[in-house]
Image: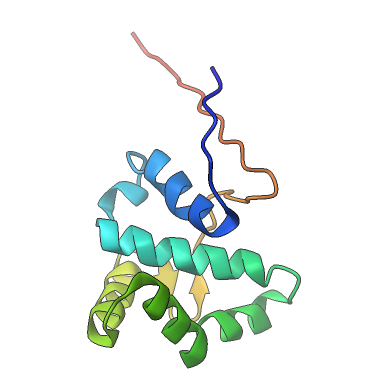
Length: 118
């Protein structure tokens, strides 16, 4: 079954996270944590051509986080609390994203393969 979902590259990450939300560890995140993770995934994608260690510095830079907060319309304290929570849940590290979950708007398809036991 194919269900087309209209989107853009930035919204794609949040929409894709919503689709995989029942799957651990995404299922432990609140909606606002999902919003923030989607932004980090978007910026990770946006700067994908930069070496990983330098990319992490750019993504976790104050100016980048400010742009994320402005896009999400979040106060600094709330944003920082969510970063702390995401680190405790092993979604983010101090300077990196633990996993991108294979989400990539260049190849946006997500395939679910159920393993059914009796």
